[in-house]
Image (cartoon, rainbow, N blue to C red; front, side):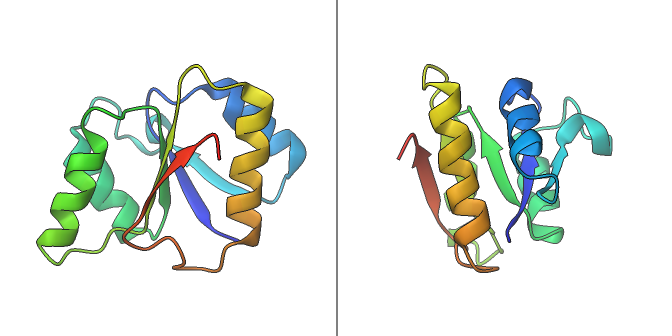
Length: 116
């Protein structure tokens, strides 16, 4: 099962829904690890260090920084971009499919867009 990091502005309703559906999901939030207010490159660096796929609604900048890490030869365990207007139930199901069915490292260097 993949380990995930929820970006600071990621919808907590989705986080709670994921945990309700699977208590064993390994998810932490940026605000829980003391990185609130940090720039995207710092968040991505922490996610890479901890081998966590980043969940985000930030389509404006995260993707650019994620690909910058790749072009610089730095690790990037993956990003899941979630549309803010996507149905929450569908997003929860999609994330669970990805997290529960993917092997460790399977999203390395990828940006996935939800809903699927």
